[in-house]
Image (cartoon, rainbow, N blue to C red):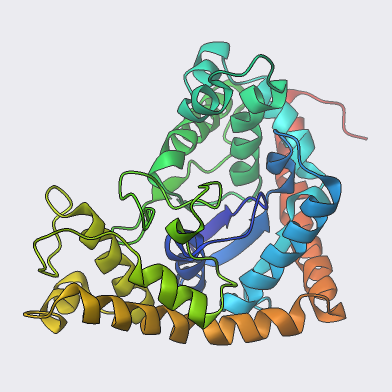
Amino acid sequence: MKRMLSGIKPSGVLNIGGYSGALSQFVRNQKEHECFFFIPDLHAITVYQDPKELNERSRELAALYIAAGIDPKRSAVFLQSHVSAHAEMGWLMETQAHFGELSRMTQFKDKSDGKDTVSSALFTYPALMAADILLYQATHVPVGDDQKQHVELTRDLANRFNNRYGETFIVPEPIIQDTGARVMGLDDPSKKMSKSNPNASSYILMTDEPAIIRKKFSRAVTDSDMSVRYDWDTKPAVSNLIEIYSVFSGLSIPEVEKHFEGQGYGNFKKELAEVVIAKLEPIQQRFNEILHSDELDQILRDGAERAAAVANETLLKAKRNMGFLIV
């Protein structure tokens, strides 16, 4: 059976880009894969996190996982920090990664640019990301375009380790979805949708109320062509909205274009808002039910136990193959 691992950092309130590019994919993939969905809180602290906010965001994200449709009976849902094998395997992977490889990681370049000081963990965390994946012998890893480089490094480290110490890890394959993998800002289709944008109308949060969602979509930039047509080269803003509609409605891109053929942007934006609201309302209801519940705590405990059983076995195998004394 194919095995999948993926996660979303608890570094802020999730917007619909996180649902489109990750959560919706998680829910679909659990039907065909053995899945481990985690919350990489150790990755979040590569930059400073307010302790109270980190705690709250981790719980909120776990609740969103379940509310969006991840079945904890089918898939393990857990916090990275609850499975100690991640940190230990992360160190083993640091010994395999080369300085030059880590220095070429584009995310490190972007996040360190212009800063006087940065955490050393910001430089080395791709090794921990590789450990996350390899611990579970994942065959497939759903990622966005911006994370593909990290999966390529993981593959290199797995092959390097296997060549040096004998067959230990499965070499994973990245999965990059075609539609909705990267949702752009409603105010600027050249920038990824992000809560860090000072313009609150540029993003839609998973917890936004219907009235707010309608208002934000009504303000979304389009173009002067007035044609609901998918073409990222000439119509990036409209193409972004079409992708959002496709993800939240379940219609293909051509079906969306046909549905709005001959119609202007006004009606398109109104329908888009309602499609998103229809998908988010039951998620928000379940989210509020489970957020501070004992049920969520038990799901995370069970998920960590299931994850640790797999991770510890892989870690022990890696340590044996490297020559560590096991007693």
